Image (tube, rainbow, N blue to C red; front, side):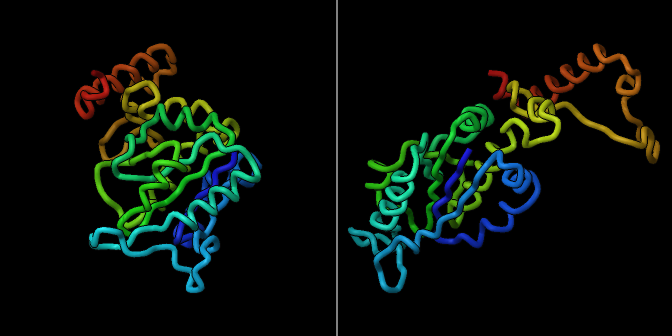
Length: 224
């Protein structure tokens, strides 16, 4: 899988993309994540990619030309399954969406900034708009990282134990059950005895019941 991220702040992405699971995926050749500075695609001598909005509204707007040039350049090299714009008014990102996106070959993620992007970009160049929640951030870099991380960790071979990803919260519309590790007793706080029993069928049943109980209590909307 290849993910191209378009941004005006590439430095915000460098460290997270070079750590942990995302680094492992790239080192193994299972994912290619390329960050592009939109300022490299502007014809403005000062490398500006924003301008005042028509109509006099406050704030600055990302211009259509550098974004169109960047997307067109990438599309001239390969086919892209999705061109995603991170936006607070997009469809809310969730685990089923991450599962679906992880099956694609090539994705572009456009990070918004300033007051927003020229709406013609959304009308003609974007195939999908995604939000990570009902709030506004300074830019789309952090949402792009969240989406990238959620997608890449699902690619077969990225995580050593692939069953681990399949048992994460939301994979079956349930929150994950509690997990414990050594020591079995600490400060009088004990691990549930069932987990020490070695009876896998009963352990699986306990885990399901715990996941169901936690979902009913914390996120009943997932059961609707």
